[in-house]
Length: 206
Figure 1 (cartoon, helix red, strand yellow):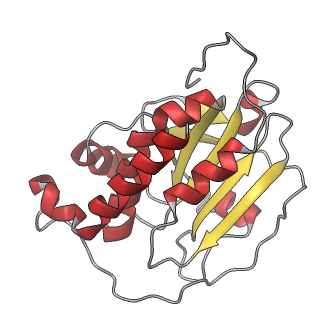
Figure 2 (cartoon, rainbow, N blue to C red):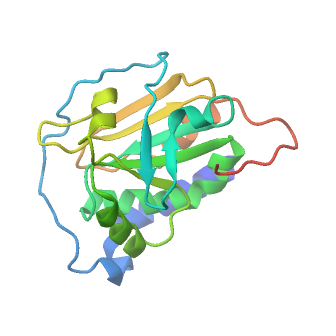
């Protein structure tokens, strides 16, 4: 496990150096909003509390509710501000290299933005295959981000991570500087703190 974490961290460092030079698919398609206020919201939840439930539609067509994972999976929620922006388009593909670490901790990842389904469909297709569900918090606009207290004054979500255990309790929160990608290594360390699946059990995404 430690070797996987080290390799993942090294990969992310290299990936971050010039992520978009690696993908011609994004050339001239990324909107750069410039430097933004690092955090522009007030959290409505805290570690140790029950996470607010929600139901959202995924790009895949699935309807996903947080309560679906109660007693079954640990859940990491990744809020990002907007499709077709630099850091967001860099952050989510990075999670592909740690899918096996998520599975080893009986965890799933849910990506959430305030974009509509057609926008997310186009964006994620050009991003390449993602192993996790990408959910639209478009309407009612930003309602789930608002529940967690990560809806910014301009109507987009913060760049935020929430780790929720199988009992629905929030175990970790990172409302990150919106201009920077959260540390993958830190997230992996937090995942390691949750109870692993029973010996012999095989992790799965859903």
